[in-house]
Image 1 (spheres, rainbow, N blue to C red):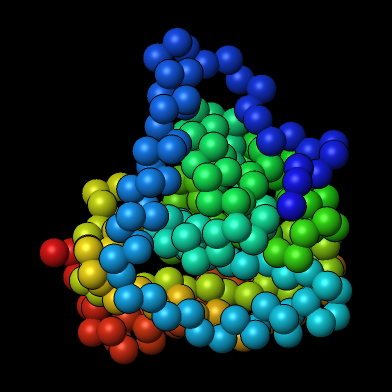
Image 2 (image 1 turned 90 degrees about the vertical axis):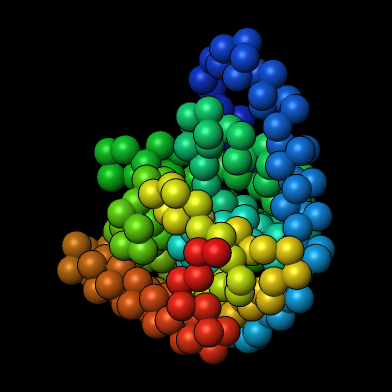
Length: 237
């Protein structure tokens, strides 16, 4: 999968010398750390056919995850050419470059002003790739609270949403707003797709809110069930 013509993949922002050095050296190191750690884990992926179900109608799907599981989800779907979204900021540029090391792509867009630019770019990406990933509570939270963008994107693209939970045990949780999950070496990692949620009838505020709440509830229920099955219980180590 190559870049899609007309979409922005690099931030237009100008970064400092220090930031440019970090952007050059950081991504391969971060990617190597994630790959090395995940290679030690016992991994299980369940119900991937939910993506095929979602694609059966329109040929595309939106994978909805919580920000805390991003690193593990990236590993699970490495080398698929799937697209996601990052901001124009330094952190967004770093994330976009890390994704390249996993065979994934990040289109760029601002989440301000209702996120219309971000939705437009992901909608365009959906015309070319089977799946795009969407972090429901990104880029700054609140934790595990979905934002309206998922309902807007699903409605305007006419594409179903597939909740994706990734849990691990034992884990560390970082002291960040998203409580990022980091599996300990040798951990058991389980990724599971929930049932596809059909696109809203339109992008009216009522339909968007209904979809937002439904995806949030579905993903939280899926996480809760998987956490209980692993006896994780929010293990912080």
